[in-house]
Length: 283
Image (tube, rainbow, N blue to C red):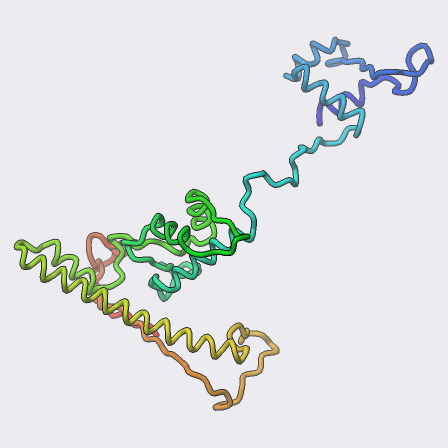
């Protein structure tokens, strides 16, 4: 804009030349601190190249002393992911997490973010991507690459995470893993490993039962148009008692008793607190 403003100030009469005839090309009287200089000196002072000055003069002749706009402004790049493809990928990850992940009751600490969702530690992003590529999809909906898949996961679904080794979710799992690590004989390793496999299998069957019951409740709420009702709205009128027949599923989430600090590998600031015995209970 500085050079464009000076071009506007240095420009001769755009209509007629010094002889009073029609001007065929633009002319400028360059100066610096009141001293007349040539175009080369003007370009050196303002660190402007020859092609840059030519482009500025063409822009000034066509549009005047206004900021230049890049030609690609408002245009999407050729390799951009279409919205329907990105939405289909995000929906696949959400549906996969709803069937296989563990939902935490609240966000960690005092943050008000989305509660994290943990996938099993043996289920990496690469394995989820392989299931994504193997899943059936409409012929008009293309699949994305692994790099784009991870990028969409990272930017759109940061709360869905793969459970790490140090993630303390189930106290029974932690104890069984410690027993497997501390086992000395082969019989002890086989016994503790079988106990861990049995516990994980039972947990999965219980989770499948929980998901089936939740789906049943969700279907009934959708049929009655009660799933997305905003109970905080001023126009909301609660239904009368015993006026709607549906199945309600209550979940009681009890956390194990912990001692602060719980363990040296505890994630977060709990390690630096005093030794207090607490019992956490949520409904």
